[in-house]
Length: 347
Image (tube, rainbow, N blue to C red; front, side):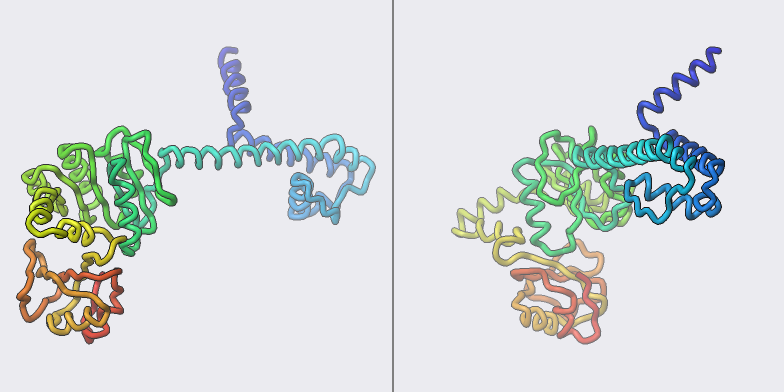
Protein backbone atom coordinates (compact mmCIF):
# COMPACT_ATOMS: atom_id res chain seq x y z
CA UNK A 1 0.00 0.00 0.00
CA UNK A 2 2.74 2.55 0.83
CA UNK A 3 4.37 1.79 -2.55
CA UNK A 4 1.09 2.36 -4.40
CA UNK A 5 0.53 5.57 -2.43
CA UNK A 6 3.99 6.88 -3.31
CA UNK A 7 3.44 6.06 -6.98
CA UNK A 8 0.11 7.90 -6.95
CA UNK A 9 1.68 10.93 -5.25
CA UNK A 10 4.54 10.96 -7.79
CA UNK A 11 2.08 10.63 -10.67
CA UNK A 12 0.00 13.50 -9.27
CA UNK A 13 3.07 15.75 -8.95
CA UNK A 14 4.21 14.94 -12.46
CA UNK A 15 0.70 15.66 -13.73
CA UNK A 16 0.63 19.07 -12.03
CA UNK A 17 4.03 19.95 -13.57
CA UNK A 18 2.89 18.79 -17.03
CA UNK A 19 5.88 16.51 -17.53
CA UNK A 20 6.45 15.76 -21.20
CA UNK A 21 6.38 11.99 -20.77
CA UNK A 22 3.06 12.15 -18.94
CA UNK A 23 1.63 14.46 -21.59
CA UNK A 24 2.71 12.06 -24.36
CA UNK A 25 1.30 9.07 -22.48
CA UNK A 26 -2.03 10.84 -21.90
CA UNK A 27 -2.21 11.90 -25.55
CA UNK A 28 -1.52 8.38 -26.85
CA UNK A 29 -4.06 6.88 -24.45
CA UNK A 30 -6.72 9.44 -25.38
CA UNK A 31 -6.34 9.02 -29.15
CA UNK A 32 -6.23 5.21 -28.84
CA UNK A 33 -9.45 5.18 -26.80
CA UNK A 34 -11.02 7.65 -29.23
CA UNK A 35 -10.15 5.43 -32.19
CA UNK A 36 -11.76 2.47 -30.41
CA UNK A 37 -14.92 4.44 -29.67
CA UNK A 38 -15.22 5.66 -33.28
CA UNK A 39 -14.64 2.11 -34.50
CA UNK A 40 -17.41 0.75 -32.26
CA UNK A 41 -19.67 3.59 -33.43
CA UNK A 42 -19.23 2.40 -37.02
CA UNK A 43 -17.04 5.25 -38.31
CA UNK A 44 -15.20 3.08 -40.82
CA UNK A 45 -14.05 6.06 -42.92
CA UNK A 46 -12.18 7.50 -39.92
CA UNK A 47 -10.78 4.28 -38.44
CA UNK A 48 -9.96 2.04 -41.41
CA UNK A 49 -6.95 4.14 -42.47
CA UNK A 50 -4.32 5.22 -39.91
CA UNK A 51 -3.24 8.34 -41.82
CA UNK A 52 -6.86 9.48 -42.21
CA UNK A 53 -7.47 9.12 -38.48
CA UNK A 54 -4.27 11.02 -37.61
CA UNK A 55 -5.26 13.75 -40.08
CA UNK A 56 -8.78 14.00 -38.64
CA UNK A 57 -7.44 14.06 -35.06
CA UNK A 58 -4.85 16.75 -35.88
CA UNK A 59 -7.25 19.07 -37.69
CA UNK A 60 -9.85 18.68 -34.96
CA UNK A 61 -7.47 19.09 -31.99
CA UNK A 62 -5.87 22.20 -33.53
CA UNK A 63 -9.33 23.69 -34.27
CA UNK A 64 -8.44 24.00 -37.99
CA UNK A 65 -11.48 21.85 -38.81
CA UNK A 66 -11.32 21.49 -42.61
CA UNK A 67 -14.41 19.29 -42.49
CA UNK A 68 -13.37 16.92 -45.29
CA UNK A 69 -13.47 14.10 -42.73
CA UNK A 70 -16.15 14.04 -40.04
CA UNK A 71 -18.30 11.52 -38.14
CA UNK A 72 -21.23 10.26 -40.26
CA UNK A 73 -23.14 8.07 -37.81
CA UNK A 74 -25.25 9.35 -34.94
CA UNK A 75 -23.19 7.39 -32.42
CA UNK A 76 -19.98 8.75 -33.93
CA UNK A 77 -21.20 12.32 -33.64
CA UNK A 78 -22.05 11.76 -29.97
CA UNK A 79 -18.56 10.36 -29.36
CA UNK A 80 -17.09 13.41 -31.11
CA UNK A 81 -19.24 15.95 -29.25
CA UNK A 82 -19.07 14.45 -25.76
CA UNK A 83 -15.59 12.91 -25.77
CA UNK A 84 -13.31 13.71 -28.68
CA UNK A 85 -13.80 17.46 -29.14
CA UNK A 86 -13.25 18.50 -25.49
CA UNK A 87 -10.52 15.89 -24.88
CA UNK A 88 -8.50 16.68 -27.99
CA UNK A 89 -8.69 20.41 -27.30
CA UNK A 90 -7.47 19.79 -23.75
CA UNK A 91 -4.55 17.64 -24.92
CA UNK A 92 -3.59 20.12 -27.69
CA UNK A 93 -3.77 23.12 -25.34
CA UNK A 94 -1.70 21.34 -22.70
CA UNK A 95 0.96 20.36 -25.28
CA UNK A 96 1.06 23.90 -26.70
CA UNK A 97 1.30 25.36 -23.20
CA UNK A 98 4.15 23.00 -22.28
CA UNK A 99 6.04 23.86 -25.49
CA UNK A 100 5.56 27.61 -25.05
CA UNK A 101 6.54 27.41 -21.38
CA UNK A 102 9.71 25.47 -22.22
CA UNK A 103 10.70 27.99 -24.88
CA UNK A 104 10.04 30.96 -22.59
CA UNK A 105 12.04 29.32 -19.80
CA UNK A 106 14.95 28.64 -22.16
CA UNK A 107 14.95 32.22 -23.44
CA UNK A 108 14.76 33.57 -19.89
CA UNK A 109 17.70 31.41 -18.76
CA UNK A 110 19.77 32.56 -21.74
CA UNK A 111 18.93 36.21 -21.03
CA UNK A 112 19.89 35.72 -17.38
CA UNK A 113 23.26 34.23 -18.33
CA UNK A 114 22.53 30.55 -17.69
CA UNK A 115 22.38 29.38 -21.29
CA UNK A 116 24.77 26.85 -22.79
CA UNK A 117 26.69 27.77 -25.96
CA UNK A 118 29.05 24.80 -25.91
CA UNK A 119 28.14 23.82 -29.49
CA UNK A 120 28.63 27.33 -30.90
CA UNK A 121 31.48 27.45 -33.44
CA UNK A 122 33.79 30.35 -34.29
CA UNK A 123 32.77 32.61 -31.41
CA UNK A 124 34.82 35.46 -29.99
CA UNK A 125 34.81 35.08 -26.20
CA UNK A 126 35.42 37.87 -23.70
CA UNK A 127 36.23 36.55 -20.23
CA UNK A 128 35.68 39.09 -17.45
CA UNK A 129 33.65 42.28 -17.32
CA UNK A 130 34.84 45.82 -16.77
CA UNK A 131 32.21 48.53 -16.77
CA UNK A 132 34.56 51.08 -18.31
CA UNK A 133 36.30 48.92 -20.90
CA UNK A 134 34.17 45.96 -22.00
CA UNK A 135 31.75 47.98 -24.10
CA UNK A 136 34.68 49.66 -25.88
CA UNK A 137 36.25 46.25 -26.49
CA UNK A 138 33.05 45.02 -28.12
CA UNK A 139 32.82 48.15 -30.29
CA UNK A 140 36.39 47.66 -31.49
CA UNK A 141 35.85 43.96 -32.17
CA UNK A 142 32.90 44.74 -34.41
CA UNK A 143 34.68 47.65 -36.09
CA UNK A 144 37.76 45.47 -36.69
CA UNK A 145 35.85 43.45 -39.33
CA UNK A 146 37.52 40.17 -38.39
CA UNK A 147 34.42 37.96 -38.36
CA UNK A 148 33.43 38.75 -34.78
CA UNK A 149 29.71 38.29 -35.42
CA UNK A 150 29.23 35.92 -32.46
CA UNK A 151 30.51 37.47 -29.23
CA UNK A 152 30.12 35.65 -25.90
CA UNK A 153 30.76 37.41 -22.58
CA UNK A 154 31.65 35.27 -19.55
CA UNK A 155 31.36 37.26 -16.34
CA UNK A 156 30.88 37.02 -12.59
CA UNK A 157 29.18 40.39 -12.51
CA UNK A 158 25.44 40.45 -11.90
CA UNK A 159 25.24 43.99 -13.28
CA UNK A 160 26.78 43.45 -16.71
CA UNK A 161 25.19 45.62 -19.37
CA UNK A 162 25.42 44.05 -22.81
CA UNK A 163 25.45 45.47 -26.28
CA UNK A 164 22.82 44.10 -28.63
CA UNK A 165 23.65 40.65 -30.01
CA UNK A 166 26.17 39.68 -27.30
CA UNK A 167 25.59 36.32 -25.61
CA UNK A 168 25.85 36.37 -21.81
CA UNK A 169 27.22 33.58 -19.61
CA UNK A 170 27.30 34.12 -15.84
CA UNK A 171 29.46 32.06 -13.51
CA UNK A 172 30.80 32.11 -9.97
CA UNK A 173 34.36 31.51 -11.23
CA UNK A 174 35.93 32.53 -14.51
CA UNK A 175 38.46 29.68 -14.44
CA UNK A 176 35.87 26.91 -13.92
CA UNK A 177 36.01 24.45 -16.82
CA UNK A 178 32.23 23.99 -16.85
CA UNK A 179 31.68 27.74 -17.19
CA UNK A 180 34.27 28.08 -19.94
CA UNK A 181 32.64 25.21 -21.84
CA UNK A 182 29.26 26.94 -21.62
CA UNK A 183 30.92 30.06 -23.04
CA UNK A 184 31.87 28.23 -26.29
CA UNK A 185 35.62 28.13 -25.55
CA UNK A 186 36.18 24.70 -27.07
CA UNK A 187 35.25 25.82 -30.58
CA UNK A 188 35.97 29.53 -30.24
CA UNK A 189 37.92 31.58 -32.77
CA UNK A 190 39.64 33.89 -30.29
CA UNK A 191 39.37 34.88 -26.62
CA UNK A 192 40.10 38.09 -24.70
CA UNK A 193 40.75 37.75 -20.97
CA UNK A 194 40.30 40.80 -18.73
CA UNK A 195 39.75 39.46 -15.21
CA UNK A 196 39.80 41.29 -11.90
CA UNK A 197 43.39 40.37 -10.99
CA UNK A 198 46.53 38.97 -12.58
CA UNK A 199 46.19 35.74 -10.59
CA UNK A 200 42.63 35.20 -11.82
CA UNK A 201 43.67 36.04 -15.37
CA UNK A 202 46.59 33.59 -15.19
CA UNK A 203 44.43 30.74 -13.85
CA UNK A 204 41.72 31.44 -16.40
CA UNK A 205 44.21 31.34 -19.26
CA UNK A 206 45.55 27.99 -18.06
CA UNK A 207 42.00 26.61 -17.88
CA UNK A 208 41.24 27.90 -21.38
CA UNK A 209 44.40 26.29 -22.73
CA UNK A 210 43.32 23.01 -21.09
CA UNK A 211 40.12 23.07 -23.14
CA UNK A 212 41.56 24.42 -26.39
CA UNK A 213 45.24 23.96 -27.23
CA UNK A 214 45.28 26.03 -30.41
CA UNK A 215 43.00 28.95 -29.50
CA UNK A 216 44.51 32.43 -29.79
CA UNK A 217 44.38 34.03 -26.32
CA UNK A 218 44.91 37.74 -25.68
CA UNK A 219 45.08 38.55 -21.97
CA UNK A 220 45.59 41.77 -20.01
CA UNK A 221 47.99 41.89 -17.04
CA UNK A 222 49.06 44.66 -14.71
CA UNK A 223 52.44 43.10 -13.87
CA UNK A 224 55.02 42.63 -16.63
CA UNK A 225 56.69 39.60 -15.03
CA UNK A 226 53.36 37.81 -14.64
CA UNK A 227 52.54 38.65 -18.24
CA UNK A 228 55.86 37.22 -19.42
CA UNK A 229 55.39 33.98 -17.44
CA UNK A 230 51.82 33.59 -18.67
CA UNK A 231 52.95 34.05 -22.27
CA UNK A 232 55.62 31.35 -21.87
CA UNK A 233 53.49 28.83 -19.96
CA UNK A 234 50.07 29.26 -21.54
CA UNK A 235 51.21 30.28 -25.02
CA UNK A 236 49.19 33.47 -25.13
CA UNK A 237 49.61 37.06 -26.23
CA UNK A 238 50.02 39.08 -23.05
CA UNK A 239 49.09 42.76 -23.03
CA UNK A 240 50.45 45.09 -20.36
CA UNK A 241 49.32 48.65 -19.89
CA UNK A 242 51.63 51.12 -21.65
CA UNK A 243 50.17 54.13 -19.88
CA UNK A 244 53.56 55.21 -18.50
CA UNK A 245 55.21 55.03 -21.94
CA UNK A 246 52.28 56.84 -23.57
CA UNK A 247 52.47 59.52 -20.89
CA UNK A 248 56.18 60.10 -21.57
CA UNK A 249 55.56 60.23 -25.35
CA UNK A 250 52.76 62.73 -24.84
CA UNK A 251 55.04 64.91 -22.70
CA UNK A 252 58.06 64.77 -25.01
CA UNK A 253 56.17 64.74 -28.34
CA UNK A 254 52.84 66.58 -28.02
CA UNK A 255 50.04 64.64 -29.71
CA UNK A 256 51.90 61.32 -29.68
CA UNK A 257 49.68 59.95 -26.90
CA UNK A 258 46.57 60.63 -28.93
CA UNK A 259 48.13 59.02 -31.98
CA UNK A 260 48.94 55.87 -30.01
CA UNK A 261 45.35 55.67 -28.79
CA UNK A 262 43.98 56.14 -32.32
CA UNK A 263 46.21 53.39 -33.73
CA UNK A 264 44.77 50.93 -31.21
CA UNK A 265 41.09 51.71 -31.90
CA UNK A 266 39.41 50.19 -34.96
CA UNK A 267 36.67 52.82 -34.91
CA UNK A 268 38.99 55.87 -34.93
CA UNK A 269 41.10 56.79 -37.98
CA UNK A 270 43.81 54.39 -39.15
CA UNK A 271 44.36 51.17 -37.23
CA UNK A 272 47.03 48.47 -37.02
CA UNK A 273 45.97 45.23 -38.72
CA UNK A 274 47.86 41.99 -39.34
CA UNK A 275 47.99 39.20 -41.91
CA UNK A 276 50.25 36.28 -42.77
CA UNK A 277 51.72 34.93 -46.00
CA UNK A 278 51.54 31.35 -47.23
CA UNK A 279 54.71 31.65 -49.29
CA UNK A 280 57.85 33.71 -49.69
CA UNK A 281 57.16 37.26 -50.88
CA UNK A 282 59.40 40.22 -51.60
CA UNK A 283 58.95 43.20 -49.32
CA UNK A 284 58.92 45.52 -52.34
CA UNK A 285 55.91 43.69 -53.80
CA UNK A 286 54.17 43.58 -50.43
CA UNK A 287 54.71 47.29 -49.83
CA UNK A 288 53.31 48.09 -53.30
CA UNK A 289 50.30 45.80 -52.81
CA UNK A 290 49.45 47.54 -49.56
CA UNK A 291 49.98 51.01 -51.04
CA UNK A 292 47.48 50.19 -53.80
CA UNK A 293 44.91 49.81 -51.00
CA UNK A 294 45.93 53.00 -49.15
CA UNK A 295 47.74 50.97 -46.48
CA UNK A 296 51.26 51.27 -45.08
CA UNK A 297 53.58 48.46 -44.00
CA UNK A 298 54.93 49.13 -40.50
CA UNK A 299 56.37 45.86 -39.13
CA UNK A 300 57.21 42.21 -39.85
CA UNK A 301 57.67 39.06 -37.82
CA UNK A 302 59.17 35.84 -39.11
CA UNK A 303 57.65 32.37 -38.58
CA UNK A 304 57.76 31.61 -34.86
CA UNK A 305 59.56 34.86 -34.03
CA UNK A 306 58.59 36.81 -30.93
CA UNK A 307 60.50 39.89 -32.13
CA UNK A 308 59.31 42.38 -34.73
CA UNK A 309 61.25 43.98 -37.57
CA UNK A 310 60.76 47.65 -38.38
CA UNK A 311 62.47 49.74 -41.03
CA UNK A 312 64.81 48.88 -42.60
CA UNK A 313 62.99 45.66 -43.64
CA UNK A 314 64.69 42.52 -44.99
CA UNK A 315 64.29 41.78 -48.68
CA UNK A 316 61.81 38.92 -48.22
CA UNK A 317 59.14 37.66 -45.84
CA UNK A 318 59.10 33.87 -45.76
CA UNK A 319 56.17 31.43 -45.56
CA UNK A 320 54.33 31.64 -42.23
CA UNK A 321 55.59 35.15 -41.55
CA UNK A 322 53.27 37.95 -40.49
CA UNK A 323 53.11 41.58 -41.53
CA UNK A 324 51.46 44.55 -39.87
CA UNK A 325 50.01 47.51 -41.68
CA UNK A 326 48.14 50.75 -41.08
CA UNK A 327 44.83 51.25 -42.83
CA UNK A 328 41.42 52.81 -42.26
CA UNK A 329 39.80 49.34 -42.49
CA UNK A 330 40.89 45.71 -42.53
CA UNK A 331 41.87 44.52 -46.01
CA UNK A 332 40.70 41.21 -47.41
CA UNK A 333 43.12 38.53 -48.57
CA UNK A 334 41.98 39.14 -52.16
CA UNK A 335 42.76 42.85 -51.94
CA UNK A 336 46.30 42.26 -50.69
CA UNK A 337 47.19 39.28 -52.88
CA UNK A 338 46.40 41.06 -56.17
CA UNK A 339 49.98 42.31 -56.39
CA UNK A 340 51.67 39.22 -54.92
CA UNK A 341 51.20 36.72 -57.71
CA UNK A 342 50.48 33.20 -56.48
CA UNK A 343 51.43 33.85 -52.86
CA UNK A 344 48.37 33.25 -50.63
CA UNK A 345 47.53 35.75 -47.90
CA UNK A 346 45.89 34.70 -44.63
CA UNK A 347 43.89 37.32 -42.74
